[in-house]
Image (cartoon, rainbow over all chains, first blue to last red; front, top):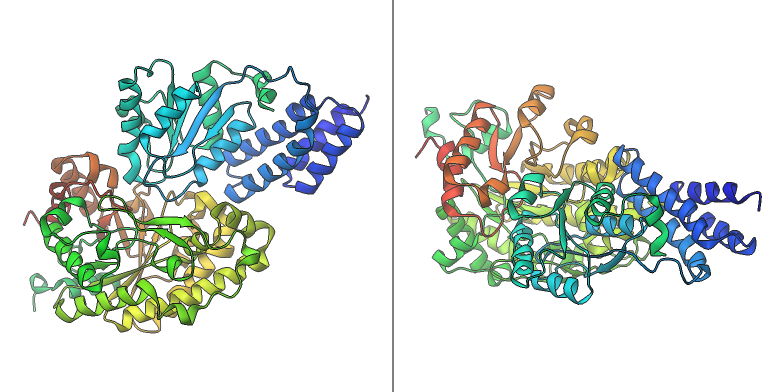
Length: 225
Length: 343
């Protein structure tokens, strides 16, 4: 298959270029041509999302652009996912994510979810306005590796502290890492409440989650699909 | 008349006009930036969520807030869901501690959001209650200004249309995005004028979704700047001054800030107002005592940070963003007391 590499590049470009239809039709082409679906996701779609994340960090892209890129990525994933060989992606790390009770917005959380998902993490999305106890219950029952807490408002920051207290009370603090992020949150706040890490944006959240779970590197990336 | 005799109304009016004052006013405008903290409500007995609905309670709570905290204004309402609710989104009205929020946006997509009935909405629901509260407060307010707070166009549109879909719509369906924003801005002009006619001395616009960090400079200019100015122009024809609060870091959109036609620009805690003033001396700056410090700090720390704002010549002193309802009254009094000179 001489043009595989070219196809991966085109898939990646379609994601970076916010081209939803292009990503879907290129993915269908990959299937038709018998390209390995896992590789097409890893080297194509996920690579594009990683480039989009870099552009976001460089302030070339902002949230609307990143969302458009993720739509293109998901359009491709919908086509490719059914064609992944079954043995791939068994051992992936799980992140329970949500917006702490009291917040009105979930934009940041959704971005983190998209970036983590495209980086090989298995995401349990609890949505917005989640009570602290629910994070802990889900993390324990789902055997999650990480809890990701997001907020845009100072009003919910006490809830973040509560999640960590509840984890301790449940005797699960050593099994579950806690990462926090969002507008009003800072590294010093994360340290103060005893979180394992803080990230200031969605791209950084990926690096942090990899660090916390010991899954650095792109080889872990496409496992989620 | 000496400067010491300035009433709160005169002082803020002079600050808006960039005239000399004895000291800056210290205010909390209401809306997303309101000081209806738990401690005030428990002392005064006028409580949320009930006060979101009743003009009598809303007015009474705004008096409790002013008397308890020392802020030099009345500010209503106590949330930023009044507008979205009357235009058809589902709202969770929250509790004593927890502010209201949108439960479900009315529209899934900007292309569906035609037919917003701006004129009809002005006569309905909590819009009428807020207007009635403003007129009750103004009737007995004396020399203390009443600030009416409204939600900015981008945030209102993102409370009517699913926010993720709305943000994408700005990029891929700009015709419909502009249509929605024009409609909500028309409604907001009507609402703000209603508050002005009811006796508001100033209108404050909070638009937390319209940040440079979310939108980037290009879309900030195309959408946020355009519609906030349309709203401001619509209010200013009534002669009532306007405060615009911009959330988040300003870096990527700083150049557009002087183009906002409000009398005062309020900024978030991350913004160095001293540098902003130095770069754009024509601005009347407002802010920006960290709400993190107000919640987690102590009165000494609040006082020290307030001193810095005074030293930097910030024109109107205010919290930097929305206050937590669990902020302590002692901390807030340290803010207002320091501005007033330890009074």
